[in-house]
Image 1: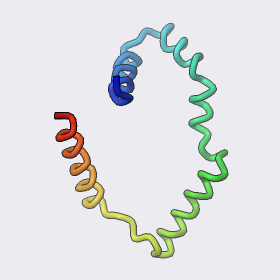
Image 2: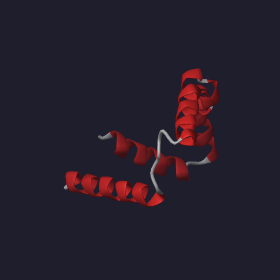
Image 3: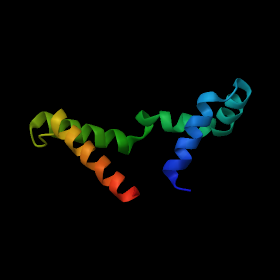
Amino acid sequence: MTTASIRHKLYDYIRVADDKKLHSIYNLLESEIEHANEWWKNKEFVAELDRRYEAMESGEDKGVTMEQLDASIQAAAQRRLKKAR
């Protein structure tokens, strides 16, 4: 089973799970969930965000337009569909 299908199955399960099961799942994963949500405590990650922000502000990195981003996403989706066939 692929990672994507596992994610999809878990997502579907969590959406309809009863309260008791949700609490059990959360308790099982709580420390990882809390760690993942504390991105601001990761100095390397914050430094990378700062570097990218400054590159955008200075004009060193021009970024992409929403149209370019959308086209890139559409192209990736098309490649994924072709690969899945």
